[in-house]
Image (cartoon, rainbow, N blue to C red; front, side):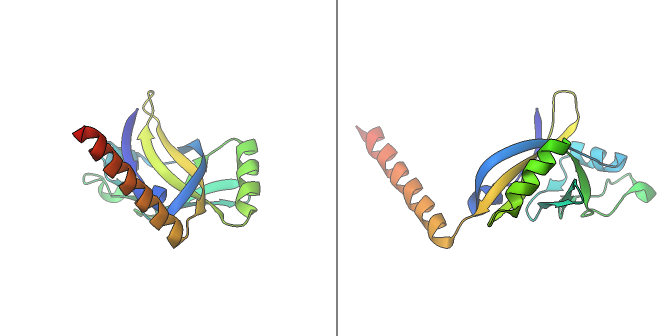
Length: 148
C-alpha cells in the first residue's frame, strides 16, 4: 500500500468513530498526477446524494503533460461504495453532528486508487485543549521515565 496523501487536520478537528474504504472514479491524467503525489485532502468532505457518495474539494493538481485532457482540480468525484454501506452511512450522517471526511488516499496492492473515509463527529474547542494537555502530560511522563 502506497500512501499518497493523509488528512492530519481531520484527526485534529474531528473524533473519528469508524472508517471505510472506497474506490474513486478518476480520469487518466488525475491518476498520473496522483502517482507523482500531487494531492491535498485538507478541505475535503463527502456527501451522499440520491444514493451515491461524492467527494468534494479534494485538490488533485493537473498533470503537467496532460494539456487538453486535464480536468478541474477540485471537481466532485464519485466514490464507489456498496449500496448497503451507503444506506448505513446515510443513516449515520443524518444523526446530529456526524459527517464524512476523507482521511487518506492511497494505492492498494493492485495499484487501484482507494480513499479511506471516516465517519466523524466534530470536536469542541475545549475537547481539543484536553487532547493537547493529555499529550503534553504523556510526553513529560516519558521524559521523567527516560531520566531514570
